[in-house]
Image (cartoon, rainbow, N blue to C red; front, side, top):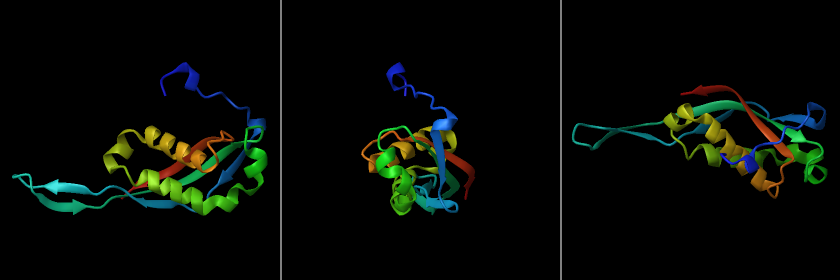
Length: 130
């Protein structure tokens, strides 16, 4: 996000409510093809990423009245949106620019809720790769 128009407005903590997903997510990443000297696929390495997800919801944001109280009811849809977004990436993309992946996750989840920005932030913790 480069333009000043897209700069995120800071929401005071008093106007935020947290919501955390149950347990850690484990998501398969794009397979890594290992090539031999001739450029042929020698093997395929499978990688996974594991992390915990939580959100900060803007209690004054558009959509909070409609979805805020029942946000947790959508956990399986939220999990699917995050899984679909992250699984498109390789382990190197995640390691080198996880902020970009996190932003894609946030936009994907906001898309479930009519692009409403009451979903203020998406926090990722305890990132592990396998």
